[in-house]
Length: 116
Image 1 (tube, helix red, strand yellow):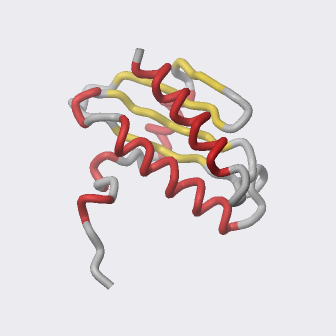
Image 2 (cartoon, rainbow, N blue to C red):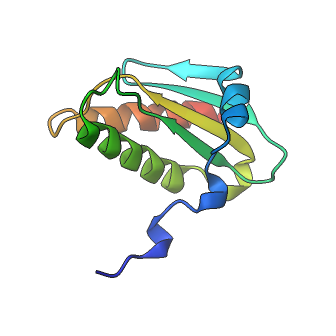
């Protein structure tokens, strides 16, 4: 199976270090019933994403992986590289096939508010 690299979030656009997560979690945030989005300006010159999908809020691994995939995809499509911000998204609720559309809309609304 071929994997299209254009449809992934490059490694350089991901927040990986715990200290970077901590700094972002102290920054300005927006929240709704599905997600909390933390936004912090960075000096890298490009936008980066960190995802928190805990076992406590989503006990099933399938839901956690689906949420992380969805968050990365929405971030990739809606935040250009030139924004120069660190964004950490914390998922607060379990996803399933019935609620995924509502969760996507909620995340899109938060991302649009964050870009303002």
